[in-house]
Each structure stands twice: as C-alpha cells, then as structure tokens.
Length: 440
Image (cartoon, rainbow, N blue to C red; front, side):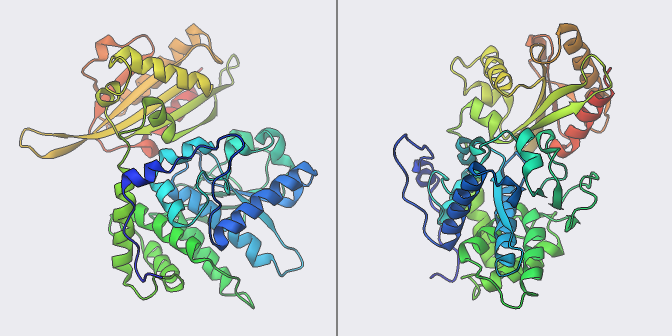
C-alpha cells in the first residue's frame, strides 16, 4: 500500500467511467469494507421501508448542491452512528442520503474521482440518492426516527416534518433544530473537519474502537484538502489542520508528511474539478443547483420557488455551448430546466476570469435573474416580483452591479449584471430571499 496519495487519474480516464445504469445490467461492485457497508445499508433501508419500518432509520443529509464536502460529511456520520452503537443495547440504523439525482453526481468530476479512489461501485449503486428515495420526503419525513443535517443549516421545506437530531455546519446558524445534539456551528474550510473531529472524539471514548476503513479516512482527507486548498487557503482553520492530522495518523498515508499529502490531494481533485468543458448548458445549470420554497407576505402567493445555480463560465462562454450559439438558445435551455424543477424565480451566478489592459487575469462575476409566470404566479405578479428583486440587487452598493454588455437584448423579466465584488451565493442568496420574503 502506498505511503502517499497515488498519482491522479487523468481527467479523460475519469470521464470514461460511465455513470449510466442500463436496464438489466450492473456494474462491478466496489471493493473494500466501506463500499460493502454502504451497499448493505442501502439494501437494509429499502427492505425496512417496504416492510413499514422507516421509523427505525436516521437519514444523514447534506445540501442539495452535492459537493464532495457535503457527500463525505453525510457518509462519515452515517457510518459512525451505525458502528459506534452496534454493540450497544440500542443500535442505530443510519444512512447517508445524497440530495442530488444519481445522474447529477458525476457532473462534479472531483466527486467521481474521490469515489473511485475510495473503491466505491461505479455508477454509484451503493449510494442512496434523491431520485432513489422510495417515498416523497413530505410523507416520509414524519415516519423517520429523524434526520441529521451536515453542511446544511436548515432542512429543505420538504423535510420540515422530520425531527432534527443533529446538525453540523460551517456556515451561519439559522436557528433550526434548537434541541439537536450534537449541534455544531463553527467556521472551518470544510464541514468534514467538524464531522470527523466529532467522530474521532466519540470513537476514542468507546471501550473498543470499531473498524475505520482506510477508504473513508482517505475520502475525509480529500474533502478537507479541496475545501482548504491543501490546508493553505485563507479559510483554513486550526480545526481543519488538527482534524486532518488525526485522520492522517489512522490512514494508510500515516508515514507521509501532512502538507505533502494534502497538497497532492488538492492538486488531483482540483485538476478533475476544472474539467467541465464537456458539460452542456443544462448540465452546468443543474451541476451546483440549490433551491427551496420561500414564504412571502402575499395572501395571493404565500410561497414561491427560488433556485440558484453556480457556474464557472461567463454567459458568453455558455452561449457558445448551445446548439445555435445564440442568446435565445441559452434562455430556452434555461427555461426548460427551470420548468422541469418548478422554479418561479432563478438566479445564475457565473464566475470567470478575463485579462485586464496590463495582461493580468482579473476575476469577474455575473448575476442572471429570471422570473417565470407559469408555475405559481401570474404575469402581473411575476412582473412585480422581478422588479422587487432587481431593485434589491441594484440597490446593494457593495455589489457594484453593472448591466451586461447585451442587456438591451434581454426579454421581459430577464436581467444580467456583471460585478467584481467577489460576492457569491452566500452573499447573493440572502439578498434575494429577503426581497422575496418582503414582496407583497
């Protein structure tokens, strides 16, 4: 077994591993204890659901963006809940739920690579994804023993009837699950650092430690590495560093230096993450999509559906990916996607780099705002909502929004701005949500 991370697979090799599940066929099963546990847990959950025993289960769920941190945190805590209680009088049944469709998992090549390195089954047959959930969350949630939120501060509206047992998040505490235990809100580059720290703290207090598969330990290190830039970026905390040290000591890379391991892991995952040129506009829209229902004070429209996409290409670059290479085609694809997911108002956050007059690369961002009138709101309401959100964004002086160079070609209830503020979804989303919640 190597004492340091293996060389990363080429991006092409990663892409050649198809995620498809043809009818009547099955991929070769993953190797190792971690894959076997995940597959067996998924089978047991589905058997128990069929037998009416959903009340015995805890679902550990990350956010619907489905990045490596969210996925790793969910898998880690589900594994810990089961194994830390297996010899007790009250064993826990827990499973990680990835809140993304199966076919969307590989839209993040870094996830695909990390799962392959962890010897999971190609095609993700040993993972429970949102489209494989056998019952609608609205009806399933009250039947469960409860849910655990990881890398996610508040459950999506469809899980509102579930009991929140624990929360781990490295962002802002929004007050959900006040009685959850553990309830951890702490700044860190990676939520996996918080989950792994709690896991190790509890593991080391057990009379007898359970088996910790090296594949899971390596998955945790990969999640921390990519979120922290190999423990080198400006959001890295002591928690990330100390947790990575503890995990490394238990891994097959224990004889290697932490900084070397984390740099190698960050390099391999970052190389995979940047390989997105093969994705279509629709895939880019759904690759990192987050949304939920938002309450409004309007008695006519008490809720609207709001969605956000984060895309690492400019709108001009995305237009070139369309069949006709035209502006109308991008908005047609966007309309088809938002219709499919039932969204009233959508915000696309694009980021890219350009060269300034001196030849240096400069970071740029775009905001694409679109409001539909065919889901929950009529045309007059849509016009009003569009004006409300547009004004809220333009009035925020810190963003410094400027109309896109083709803004005069946009249709009603469409707007595109450019800005250099560096503000991403964590900044833009609250502005939009507050505007929607105040719209009447």
